[in-house]
Image (cartoon, rainbow, N blue to C red; front, side, top):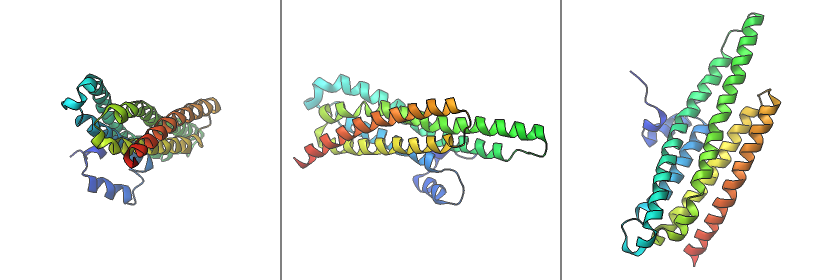
Length: 213
């Protein structure tokens, strides 16, 4: 019988696995889940906006945001599992035999490839966070203002997901020998993190100002 993927677990079961003594799911998977929660929180604001007479003028724009957010939420949920799969690939590579020179070379090559994929998963999460962050300012200004605090929640979760993604990219880059790949990937994830921080911080402070009057 096939084991359920991480997104198919109940919240309690996922948390039990995350808290347990198995190496996966780990921080990378949790980061992707935080991103999916950010998307869901943002989506709820839009759900309470469309169909309301007060927000008729913004309805078409909000619907477009909702469609994009739905796609991002699904992408992030896939990454919850993809991180577990990638970590398993790294473990399998390290478990390869190394009794002969040929085996050692094959093992080293497999480890490097597995580490690249393990770094690619959180990089994709950071990219998704950038795209999600773009939808937050419009929701904060044009979405249902009774739920504006949830945009702030989404902004904070989105930033946290991206910061954790950066950590998980870096932890894999530390063991990758291809210096050009490391430099290129590091520059990319730092750029993505900067974009998310700027947008999410601005959104959070704008929401906080609205909430506190």
